Length: 87
Image 1: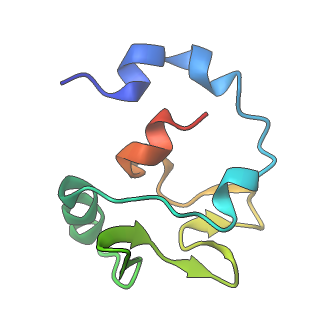
Image 2: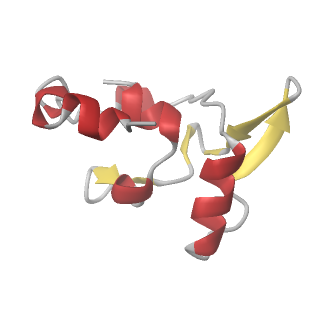
């Protein structure tokens, strides 16, 4: 299965204005593969179960992986599948 990055490539990045709005109040559902990949990288405590789904955890209303100083994602190369397809 092709990833969203390989399907859209650099074209998708044109839509991102680095406003970070999609990183606040996230309800992003995580796939088992997302959780396993991020755990292999050493991350813990980044998800919770809400509404019967594994979801990205918010800290102070923002995504666990949001780097507000650098204005980006701490795990961009390994970000969850939902984040890859969300422009």
